[in-house]
Length: 520
Image 1 (cartoon, one colour):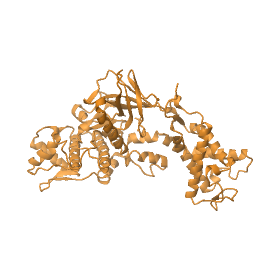
Image 2 (image 1 turned 90 degrees about the vertical axis):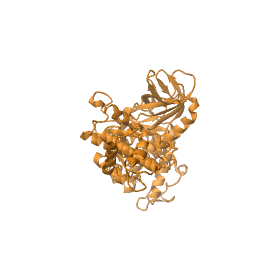
Image 3 (image 1 turned 180 degrees about the horizontal axis):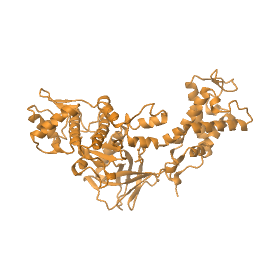
């Protein structure tokens, strides 16, 4: 969620597969995805255990491309690979950090030795590099990630970056996960459009093994010394206290906010002038409600971030969309929006939601519901039965609701077949499903009948085997039985509905696609 994201999450999970290496690309042999990259690029080496390559990720079934990174581990780092897979999966479920796209094991650079590989979404440039070397990724205005410090545009961009960081920290802390190194170097920023809401900041390098009461692995860093040794000494506070994980994250986050709003990494030095220390202390008093210093003991005061206190104001200032029934009356769209783990949606989120199959389906529900009603009438006419209601609106309310609920259930049925819904113009022609087998039609008919029975029972209907047909006034029906107990002519209503599903979705601008390419 520009609109090249997951998805879904947006691939909401990951595929585990062997990968084949060919010139400039890695791909799953089952055709599930492809990662293309420049073999001549100098890989980013974060340690002797892994190399990182930038490229583009393609998921089969969709023609959209996603900027991504491949993390290639040495075989001797299999433990680190496993831990990172677990960390990324857990954090991804919380909406924290880069989105995990694929996990694989395969060859790289023409070698014969299989290597573990993780492919994750490219989160952009580090905030530290933007502050150190300039605000643009290139010379053109279109390449600007963040504007110059002090400009009105930059003030709003700062608010958006802080919003993104805050929500990720809130989600992580709620799960008992602490970062312990929340510096600008560990925040990446991308721009997807012209407005401040089109910036996305991502926190990277969470340490899931961090104990909640110690900062031992960070206490050699310059920023740690600045916050927890140097500033207290300048303020005349002599007591040495090892910060808790909460105090550590909140202190680092306060320094990050200072760096962001002053446009420099001023606190990253070994030793600082007293004037800078006092400037930072005054900044904390006026801008940072969640962390600060007190002359009395204990000298630190820190609290967890709060959606109400720390997020709502930023969201209102940025005009972000709240995930609620007013913004998303469709259950499918609201579920999708809530899966992004954000109480508010930014420009990239909204583009993903509005460009999603769920949005296309939601906008076509009325058309689909009416088409389904016409199919129902056609089946009755073909059997020589009288048609009691000529128009959808003439039916009893329970029948109308059922028709719309049936239309909204389409995406669930498609997923049950192992297929995906994608906008028609984004579908890979090789993966489009043009016809359903009789077995699939029967499976969909069973699913629809199960949905129908559950819906009727929840609405207070009861089974009456002696009734000849459903009675919406008495709320009785002879069809509230298992699919196998239905008369065959009753099953045909659901079968005929399933037979027309592909064409109906095509009319709504949607395609049904396989998750993998068919064999050649």
